[in-house]
Amino acid sequence: MSTHRFRRPVAGAGLAVSLAAVLSLVALTGCTGGEAAAGDTGSDAEASVIVPGRPGEEARTVSPREAREAAGEGTGPNAADHAFMTMMIEHHEQAVEMTELADAYAEDSAVRGIAGRIAAAQEPEIEAMRAWLLRNAEGGEATGDGHGHGGHDGHGDTMPGMASEEELARLRAARGAEFDALFLDLMIAHHEGAVAMAADVSAQGNDVTALEMAAEIGASQRVEISRMEAMR
Image 1 (cartoon, rainbow, N blue to C red):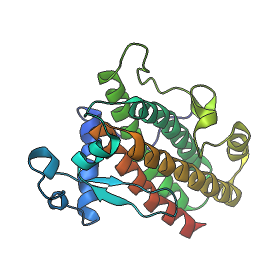
Image 2 (cartoon, one colour):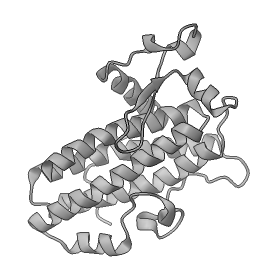
Image 3 (cartoon, one colour):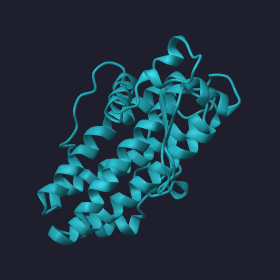
Image 4 (cartoon, rainbow, N blue to C red):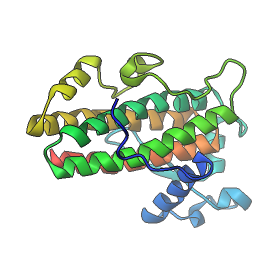
């Protein structure tokens, strides 16, 4: 694999990057901490969780307390949270691999630009998810190594939006305008899969940090899908 040209250092704990991005996203979309459910106090009143819908569905905003109550459990991570973090690492890694190919072979500067933004967002998220898995490891739970590019290992065959080895081989062989078109097709499908995974953990997960990260991923990738569809 080529050197990550878009990598940028992640300062401090990885989750701090993710949570800061969530708060920025909330501010940009007009969803402030003041929109917490009536009667909420303390930390539950200070932030909102954007619950992403599946492709074609609207997102909704709830308080962390409402998100936990919807899960019907306490505040600790459950199996859905662990599965989301583990699989999304692998999902993100494939996206980063695709962006490296765009840096080398894309013809359109706009394609290279959005590839760079994708890598710059997802590399810190990978580190944040690895840190979460390490903190929340239980016995045989995954430790967040996050290997498995292209579905070779792990859950590649069960994650929506993952490119197949045949599709990746076509992307590696493509050049110029042909590469641009194929990259956009594959990355749009990849992002739609991530949005679906974020919606699933929002409905089934329990950990506030996992829910916040899912909200960030779902919302930011919806925006990128719209941009790529316009480019296509």
